[in-house]
Length: 153
Image (cartoon, rainbow, N blue to C red; front, side, top):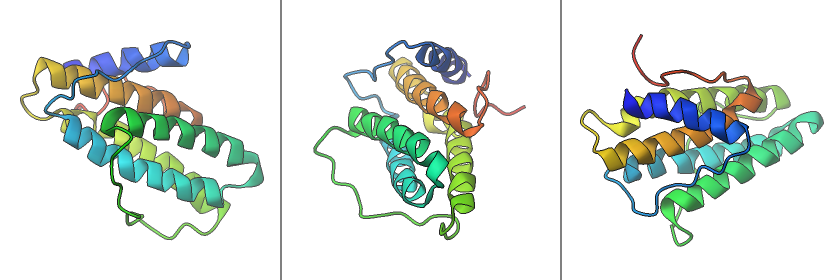
């Protein structure tokens, strides 16, 4: 719950222009953060390639932000797999737009799951900063800021 609440505040700060760096020291939640971030980067590589002309800049900007986040969470020496399975073929601009919204919404909804059932203070900070940055990027794809992302209603 704390990670979810803090992440919404950090997303707002990011949208207002504040830098929201990831903690230097990885928390116990960092592997889950990386596991969620790398497929998101891959999805946006596909989205950017298939986006309509009017959405290409937005997709490229989101991809750049996610790539920076991926580097911040896993370091520059990570070895990423060559690809992940997408939930459906993305061959049209409409598919790309739909995928963008869905993968970002699903990632925001995973905030509590990524934090784990008994997160440490370091995990709460790690996950909140990661989720805040993802949420700030997701707003451009019609994923609204959520007060408690991933928390059960």
